[in-house]
Length: 428
Image (cartoon, rainbow, N blue to C red; front, top):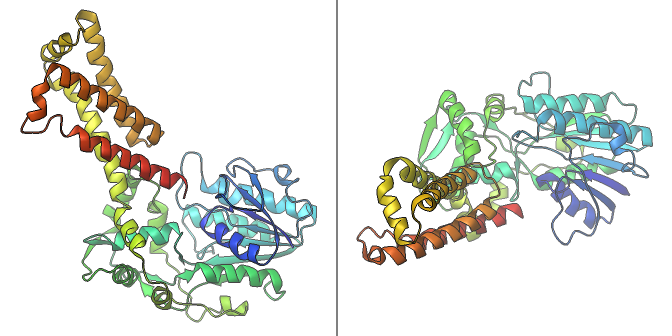
């Protein structure tokens, strides 16, 4: 079967590529970024934020038997909006596929995309679901709950929370979850491809076990090897403020929409979604028992929040260095040091202000996550340059009890470590 998969490098899409590739299907992969090395299938690069016309998809859907839309984001950015990726682009794809005579479309939606939905995430998904349901063709809409699996964004985020010394729990922690495994989601897609019974249905994919948010985090904490589970409860109001600050740390699945979805958690007692597809759903506890955490996973969970905190700490250092040069340190003192390097008069002032504003720019760039690796290289060069200059004019600083120059050595190592982490993230 010739299958078009959108969002092929995402969590669900990548799992489907592995599953369907093993089945021997001819896959055409569509994603915004390049797939990982070693992918042997045909690949097309498309920015889902802008392909909102059926004509944008016309060539891609030619001679396609099945379309699987697995595009999805947890958090919006200025360039990646829910309405564009979840609604406009899929509707254009569905329209083009219908015109091209594609036999069947499988839409990966989300649990909660129903009449009670209020979050922008769910409403955008629901618009695409409803548009597909109106087409006169074979379609299946799969609505998975919280998905558990080693590459999942939310899965890794909850692991990071569970690895903290005091685990933050939003609200009273009694929100009920019904997580489903990524393996069950992949099996559901396979079943929806091969069986005729689910055609024209919206099928909820939920796991066999219901757990509260507190229980979910506690199970993960135990799974990660923690002997104590200590919690701190955060009301929804303060949690909203925390969510507003999260972008400083990185792209974590905690925002206003996530909090709304947490309030509107859906459970389906006795739901037979997977059973309709001839499948028996797994539960969280068996999944954790069958997939014990590795040392790498435990270390990763502990580092998730440390990595952005290192970046923010380095940004703060560079910004404070600029503030100290411009406002806190007497300019005469700084100019006297520069004179020892042969920089006098206008040249000294230019060096003083130029270095200060460069420090400020580098600090702001780190906060904004702007070309982090390139900025880090510049920072290392500057630290080395500052160290050399101070060694020439004030060599006694190497023996300073506060380690004025000695501290530059671990500072360079910390910057290199930040670069390494950034490179890993870019290849995830």
